[in-house]
Image (cartoon, rainbow, N blue to C red; front, side):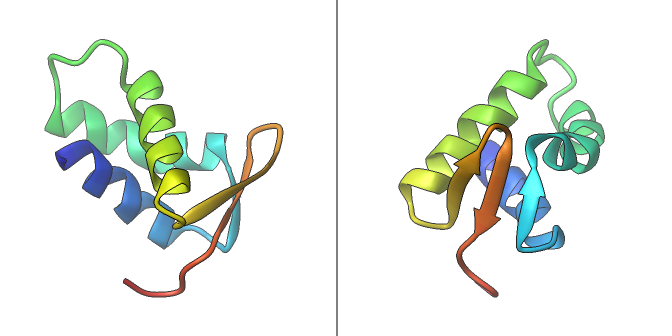
Length: 73
């Protein structure tokens, strides 16, 4: 989906270990531009991180911390 690609692009720009806030910092301005009618962009970014986790692209480390498991896609 478009949201998944947007989230993946953000994750790939971050260091291997990153926080949910890091994703928000990069992703929220992009999400608001790409999806101006979506009133819950934080929820959507968090949901897409879970999808990336299920696909084996990121791993949840602990409270709000993630690790990217791939270098380049």
